[in-house]
Image (cartoon, rainbow, N blue to C red; front, side, top):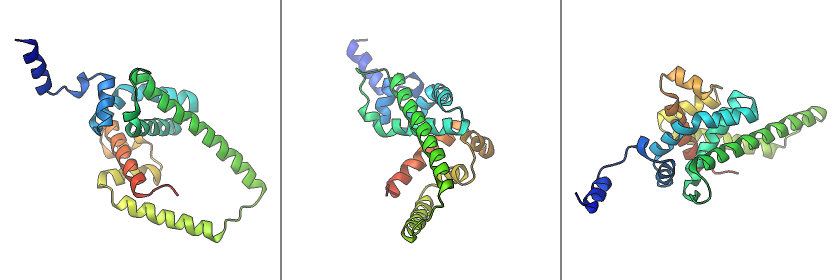
Length: 195
């Protein structure tokens, strides 16, 4: 068989996700392949969680950091440059950044809580109306999501379940829960833009 025939056969025969390199999977994610994102999560999710947990020392916050990190992978995969770093390094850097952001956010929240305790908060009518409008917009956007995505997000954010608890409760693999939540959050961000 000639080299041309071998190359043609390789092109015609799809490469299974598990056989792709990390960089090939990132290229697929950049093209919108959510299966490739799930494969990257399967490869790096546990390591990413360990990294986030070492920074945050909180299971739920570490899970949030990993989820936000992989959402960042989904959104910015087309910006990945092979010559600058390995795919694993790039992915773990995104998760690390999200974990550090969460540490800062939690520190600010604790500081604000102390400041608020010293001085009673008085929200303006406009602020309260804005929050109410935002809640209505989020609820309307949730109704536009597929049932499985909406259910996972509602249980996580309104019910307080972690992704692991959701997987157990719904009887589906953890990766499926994470994929549903990634897709649902991505769609919500499109439907309800930042104020």
